[in-house]
Image (cartoon, rainbow, N blue to C red):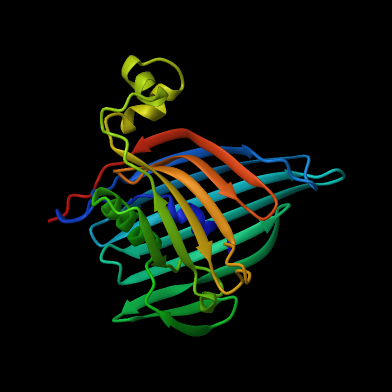
Amino acid sequence: MRVSSIAFLMLGAGTMHAASAELALHRASYDLALSDDASDMVGAEGRIAVEISGDCDAYDLDYRFVARFQQEQELIVTDQQTESREARDGSWFEFETKTFVDSSPQDTVSGTAATDGGRTTVTFTQPGEHSVEVPRALFPMQHTRSLIEKAEAGERIVETALFDGDDDPQKELTSTAIIGPGAPANATGPDARAATSGEGAAADRGAPLAGLRSWRVSESFYNSDSDADGMPVFETAYTLYENGVSDDLVLRFDGYALSGSLASLDLLDRPDCP
């Protein structure tokens, strides 16, 4: 499973109809560092840059995750770049992901997906033209919206079938999210205090989040590669705000983990939709 699935699921989108979560179009960056000791790794750091924009029909995502892994005798740099477009009603999804290692192209995955009834059909254009049909799966923006709606309703365990543009949808990616108790809108954490006082670097990134409710989400991802003991293929944790922005990330891979927080955040204008 590619890292993009995790980044997608920590993102927000544009305004929904009144019955749905109202999310924010935004531009954000996250600085990440190695948070656990890794036996074969001296150090690691990374940066995620994401922009979510859109119009009245769909959301547009521009995402990039660059990571540097320092081993005893080697430095490896990975670079994953994703562009996608997802219908506001969740009926279709277009995606392209390019992966580079040490600046050399490794692979490109692109195609479209559409959901009709109880099935989702994925049609790939790269690396080879073919189609795959899987049980109905949510796309990334749908999943973010769904988590917020369920958090607002007081649900604490959410299980979801997902498709994020992975090159092997027949592995049937699923997630189990554990949603913690919500922090009230008047919470006074360090970012909220900085945003209110106008002090420090946190003021710039914290201001758009001040006064918003949030939930701590721990999410485990599974597919057919999960072992017989039911261990996930990937785990993440993050603070999810009611406008769809995430902060305080932990990305837990096999053998190491990266953690970090917002380095910058700008809210973008919403489209004027009927």
